[in-house]
Image 1 (cartoon, rainbow, N blue to C red):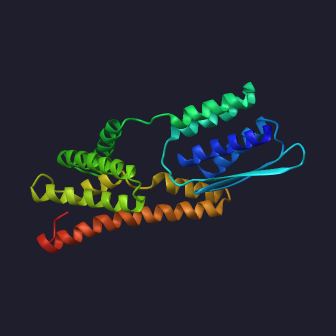
Image 2 (spheres, helix red, strand yellow):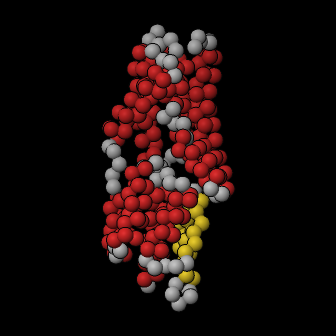
Image 3 (cartoon, rainbow, N blue to C red):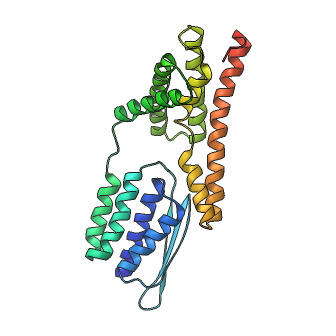
Length: 257
């Protein structure tokens, strides 16, 4: 019974950090560390971006396993940090299984920033990316608006569980269409700067980083999977902006970027 509790506890912790953007090796390391802290001497894990398999050997020699399916993924580095700290605290302070379980539930239910806060800072991020890429003051404010729109739409569609690929298509379309409208109105003259700065919100930087780190660490399945995920995200952004440009050029002609 004790071993089963530890097994489920470790698998739960691994699932939380995998859902929030942790690398494969970190998930495996965290689960094994939790098992070791509770005197489980033999623990093996296999993790992919969509699932967790954890197996331990009990004191009586029986082997028990747990499988956890991961269907949704996001980025919340704070939760990853908290569970990493918790796994270290278990070894140092000898926390009980019940205490750790309660702490995991608190971390899992921890609310992220409010939607209004995320929308605001998404706009700020897009606007300053535009400045970095050489945009002017008007480009800055247009990208601010585009950033608001992209994040708002992303939040709305995430609530109905729309596939990320289509969310990126819609986000790319919003970025291109809004920039072109403001260009047509004569507000901006650098359409490319506004669009590039805005779609930086959609660029899969963490997925690319994790793909490289997993590959270097020898987790080839996870590395290739995350790399393909990043590629499809980039394709979605390109499709969204490309469709809008194609339609715009067909109806209004070319533009000077």
